[in-house]
Length: 422
Image 1 (tube, rainbow, N blue to C red):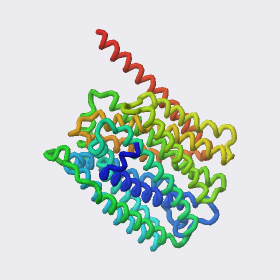
Image 2 (cartoon, helix red, strand yellow):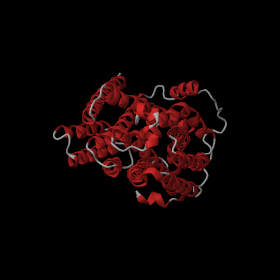
Image 3 (cartoon, rainbow, N blue to C red):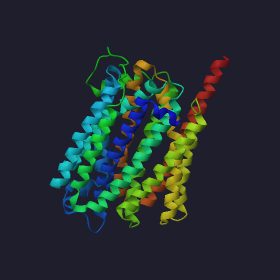
């Protein structure tokens, strides 16, 4: 599996997306910790004085980051079919440098509104990157190594997320009123990621004659029509969106959980690290189990395992060690789930529409992430639930969805068997 990294283009793409994911999550984690600090005794004055921070808390940066994916995803999906995906990767990494310069300015001026605008820009940059990043994998490694390549991408992404989240927590705790120093670090990481991406060999465009439209609604409908008739692909895309909604919700809940338990920012960040390490293990196991194919049975297994992991906290809601075990098991289950889902979404579409389908899948994923912000707001602000209550309720929701999709899949298989016999 690791031999794939010796291929220059795939190795450079993997390293570049690792650095991008690390930087984005280090920045986003720092912003979330700033918002969550309002429930502590000593928040930063410029955060505490912000009406937006007081009203919406963590829900606002989550929503602002996801919004560009919903609005721009259909357009960037078409773009990934019309021009070389390698060029898009280069552009996206260059844009990240500019976004992190804006973050550095926001921290220096201590303006929370400008910081939220930077989060929105980061979402737009990531929306451009996503369809090309996932659509190019099959072009670089081929069908046979698709599951292994996705395992590597998933594992490296989760490693980037966990390390970035930990670094974001450390920055929030260490720099305090001098957060511009963190901004400088983000700019340096972005520059390194861009430089690494230049090592990729240029791939040809999949459909250079395709017309670029600028209406996201009509483009979204057109992308969805490409899925019509393939119920497996449609269910995979919707299940991926549900998963990312719950993953984004859990991310907010865990930060609130750490604050509720009185943990410092760096210690709360290590809770996310437990999830990330579990995802790496789950992705590796999924790649080994799948071999040269796609192990579809891991999809319900992963969802049910994720739900069961949350129920561990019914035993001792305030036990930090048990929470770490729960999060590690949750990450392992997530890794088992995401690899077959990602392989189905990448492998089933025709090559000329692969970028569009990746754009569609990304939009659905980020509609889910966008919904996670309001869901957390309802739980925290409207219903005034404790983080423990939200944690268990989210697990019950995952379990219900897993049972529903498993029943739908069995019903479809029965229909297909009946049609074959007829």
